[in-house]
Length: 484
Figure 1 (cartoon, rainbow, N blue to C red):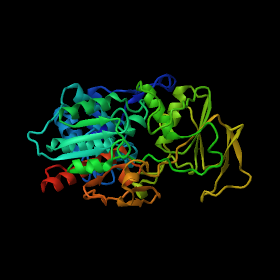
Figure 2: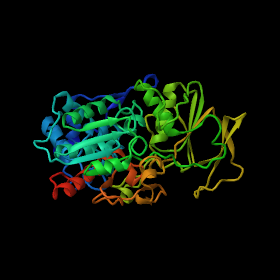
Figure 3: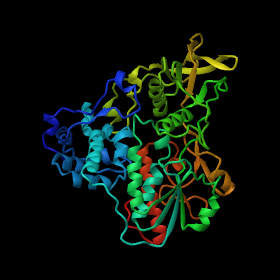
Figure 4: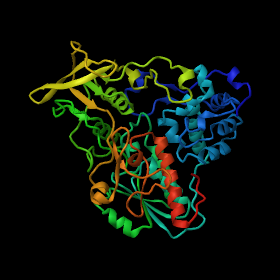
């Protein structure tokens, strides 16, 4: 724990943002870092709560030992703090930026709406560790002679690759795109995480013996069967990328797009790459001077909002079929679980108009081009309310209502009936594998991350990659010293 009376003496603070009028002019990160002393004071607020729900199953999927490294940060022992954090989380600079921090929801101090600033401290700790040279390659002392292929280099694939490489296996990562990182690189905007943080980890992993093969679409350019024949194990971490079908009339009009191609294009622009690739369309989608409507209320929708503003959109409206949530939750009924309450993302705070309890009835247009979105209000069962229809002007519309599983082309189509597919509660069709040994129905093939569990958080992907790595190590060697 931190200072015994810290939570009574020190007010909660998190890092500040650049003003919206400034940050929408660029795609860089816009958080203003806190000083080391300020971070140490925030770590001192971690109280002796008895049962730290923050790193239990309700708070942190990777089980970060949050009170422990908070205490170390409070005492200024940054080296031990990052060692402790790395013992459960390979990439705290990622989670410190893009995880929604369920740990803070589970913090005991959140009962008073003043949780420990865990996410801010985690990001600061990871960045400070790099600054001080505490993060460097840790190659294995000896090799096992075993070879493992990993399909996909998102957070699940990266976590598994690092763990398996440190266990002494020869690890080859195959990535469809031209650079590693998966949708963490190509789906999440730079204003949330700049991609040099990914490059820095790739460099560390290369120093540990992990080899990356980019521009290889397994199942298309290279058969999955070839990997299964040439490696002792293959781990599939392809992500969940198939957009969920909205079934809205008029979605074939010009100007109506799924969210992910739009985000991928802009990330490729910022990265200095051609906007098209084998998986994503190359026709430019730009919101400059446009009236934009975003259908959906989640993180992907919010990323579309922030990207549209930075491209110069005239107006951005976000439609959410859910009722507007309350400003505060009933703590005694919900805590320490993630609560449904009114949340405003940094992108939404940049000027988005938000419509709640609204259904999208139709995209309307002229001569094949979108001109508006027809909507209506809905009741508590999401049924349209007669006479409540209205039209929002729109030149561009983005559908961001989630994902329905991995792309069918590639690994899934090549393996066909050999690979068991299962539907989750959201009706997403994912690769079937349990969360103990991560084995699929195909011999030597494992699956982890969103391709197995459906769309989820980066912290869940890291957890699954780590656990799958231990399962593979145990299967190859008979036992494993890798943490689960």
